[in-house]
Image (cartoon, rainbow, N blue to C red):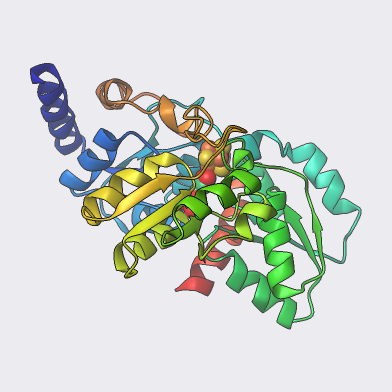
Length: 319
Ligand code: 13P
Ligand code: SF4
């Protein structure tokens, strides 16, 4: 409608005026994903977001996603202004891994290499030896295991146990989970597969083991999108936040996508398969953040430098 078109045009002007670029995750509202792409920004998984922000020449990054994504951008580009539509948009994995408790946990095993998922606070990253995202976790743990390293893994236990099974690495797991992916149900998924035996099953590894076990493709949001676009299958069952369906449908318009079940009755519980924190990003708070230059992400000097080391290790590894 007209008001929306005006708001979009206004946001486009603000981005130019402030030499800003939008960096968006696949789970934010479709209109924000489209806007990011239409204005020279990007939409991607968390590793791609980190790289894009670091390599882009804009002075300001508007990060549409959750807090850990904004913090990672700031850590990699301390000289840039990193704005977020809502600084309260966080993640259950970050919330469930407070730095004091995680540090005490790590201190019990001083001989172990500490590997943390990107979905953590800057302080937890500062305590870690390595940061990984879902797109590179398997490769990095395979490498560390080949070097004879024993590992502390945090915070996502589903991703951790999947990697442990795949690599055979000696890993002690922090017991966190993602409130969105944790809800996918194995039994209901198997029933849906029976109904659509031709469909390829795409699963994010934050899902429970009984769901991951039924997957044809396991990976980050970007990897699942690529599979949807490039695989010859005509239909897909998708076990990740439903925000990804927007790009899947855009890039593969003639294919069919079914949401993996989250509820006991076999239906998809929409409130479960959408991340409530990603949903805190909207057109209006993107606009007000840019207008007021408010909601700038801050990371203390010491934390920033320590966290940068463990993030940069991942980026160098995957380069
Ligand atoms: P990706 O790195 O796969 O995009 O995952 C981020 C995330 O928050 C998944 O829930
Ligand atoms: Fe965190 Fe899950 Fe939301 Fe991703 S979907 S930001 S892991 S709560």
